Length: 330
Image (cartoon, rainbow, N blue to C red; front, side, top):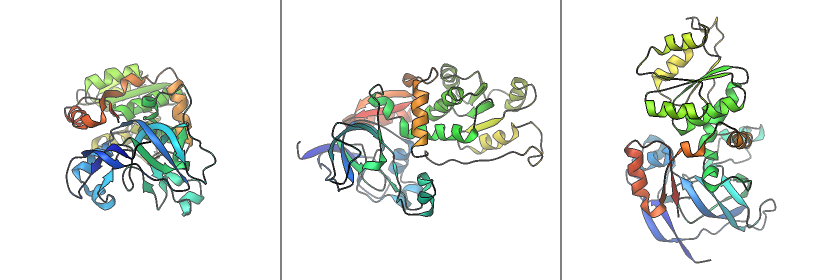
């Protein structure tokens, strides 16, 4: 193995892009870590926020740091205490690195660990040829899962987690937002037994993709009376579950009104649930089922493929509105 590697580094604690290096030291692993030869990584909205240096980033990021956390690769070295992973294993990575000691970790909720560390944020990540991570934050990949598909476990897990929380089996479901995560939520809803999935977005092209991913009906919320259309599609009853991916206030407010289409939230027993990240490892296993099902189509959620050194070209595609995940190859 050579001594240096390429990678993308956030160099300053201020608004700035990432700097491409070819002389970064290859990480040295600790006793409970593995070294991964990165095959590919996807660009996340979090990576964009770190470059923009928003409030979230200012509180958590300390430059210099190699970013990137949606990744897949092959283990090339293991620490002396690692017994459940071996050289040659193909893995993806959970970006939330739980402490194992707090109340949440000890009560089956490590995904909301109080002392969580973040791969590719608070510690060096996967926009590089090699990355290290604690072994128990790796997910073993089956042979038929491609590297590009494996990059999707971490980001799409948010959509899967929402579907898990909604308990969609036998229900009519509304999914608001048809980006890659929303499209995955549509496919997951169908995979796990939703009888009808209604998708809404502001962009017609995204709604066409939503149909391919399993949506039974699509609505452009900028061009229609959304509550009226939902009422028509549900015989006046409303949906059983509304999953919002956008985080936009109008979408959230609308989602509440789509249950039973009346005004009394208490009478209707509307339940609001927030999700964070992915359940470790339940959500990962559920997404593996979705990927093998008839609805999820990987080619519909990938927007482009680029050598890592051409990161700026991938970024330009994102900023120009090209939909889908951009994949980087070291």
